[in-house]
Image (cartoon, rainbow over all chains, first blue to last red; front, top):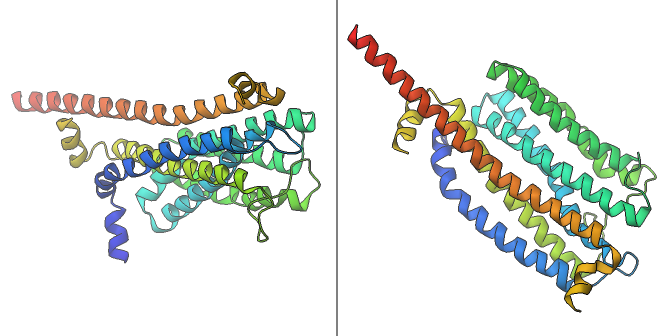
Length: 245
Length: 62
């Protein structure tokens, strides 16, 4: 097991394997998005309270879920990099940050665009919205620390610690709608009881969520490959590979 | 349902379509930016290879 982990986590091995994996994520992503959008925009019925405006949910909720998921991936891989000194783990963490930040931004802006017609305001400083905004700043802080420190190992250590400490924000975001009074609606899917959402709305939501998930896997592979090339740029295998291009 | 009704989104067109437009931009950006980054990294390594080759030739000439 340990041997297998070390083998796969060698940047060179990853670079070779990942090239074959990318289409297996990219193609299903495209298909799921097409079906999910069709279902979400044409098949799902209007909401009995919110009319057509709720269709923002099909991009807002997957983006918000991904903003949390990617942060956890980033923090866990930064932790693996810190503890076991696996270089590839640090590269995955670095590559995750901009993707996570972009989904956080998408969740915040689409939420705001949904809030205006439904709550009458683009923004309120309540628990859910504020903690999600803090998540965006955590991503920014991580990226800023990475690029501010010249020495790569020090940069990985410092930004990795920030990522790990920031994990405390993740349960706060998730439970914010339970712990505090907020304009934001409570969970309708991720709860133990039966989801309180119509099946025709749930299907496109889950399709889009899965599409976003696979999209992240495809993009993280591309970005991590870039990071491998850059960090191993003075290694012979990279030089030989580039000369062949 | 006709198309103009569809695009009107029950009066919420501005909010719904700007959300989907931004989602589109974020998705496309997440594809295009890493591919551009890849080109830049490869170009940089190619320059380094050429520079090292010249240094190497010079050291032999001496």
